[in-house]
Image (tube, rainbow, N blue to C red; front, top):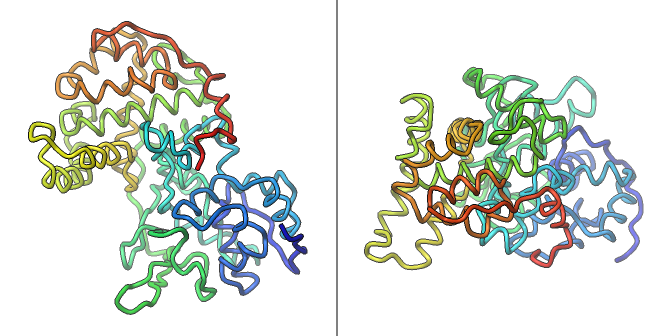
Length: 408
């Protein structure tokens, strides 16, 4: 790699800022397109220009690229590393699994990072009264890429996920990088979606102060506070997994993802796990049409469906909704299900789901037995009349380092 020189001007990263957001703000300050900034700071050379390039950049870069990046931006190694998702892996393993072939294709956890778009808080993007943030906006946070972050704890509101004008998901990508990646014309807080008809960017401001969000329900606010505390390594001291007052955050998050998958895959029968008919309707408005569109094309195993169709349906069920409120309600139902303090109680709640979706439970007693908590695996095994097994340990999860051979 060619040795890079320090840029004439740089930026201090903002708390929880993502590498993509940092590149957008730095490019805006320098008057350069994001792809040019990525090139002159050594980011692009760390990954090939394939369809997963941005997802890999969100996660981490190699040592040589990191050295070049810190030199060019004059950041410390710690400051630079915190722009990527990799440091979160010890508590939230899916942070890096989204770019690993094995975990993206063969488990329920590979979709638990939004690599094709992001959520956002309009007030956070507005920034504060400092000169830098007035000119270049606030941070595009890396935690907004995680399905478990559905609300802004600072502004006490649900996050947004789409542009208020064109309804395109924020930072949507269909190829390797963001739209308008080679253009310097947009502010970091403007919508980058490009019309195929006019080839012009939408350009709407995502910081529109006239936008308002519905009040965050108390149980969702408590859940978000708990999830953020666990993500940041500050356990809230409340039960996080069946029968235990404290669990490793990594195992809890995998249990939460797996339980959410089971609710998602068995919808609408699993709607009985939600609190009321209003919540059921909110979730069904998103899940119902998505499932219907796919299943109308492929009748299911009774006909039988092509393997590719079943694979698409499986991926759909594994992917949490980008829409914040439906996703929050699914997470809340999954979390409440996991709070039962005995295997017997957990079994009793799962039985109605098992009656309509035995094949969906196989994944928990299959490869996921190495990752989910023993209590969750044992509960599902009991429902399926299989031998119980205790296998998940923090060391087993943490041993899956970023050099794993499954990475693309």
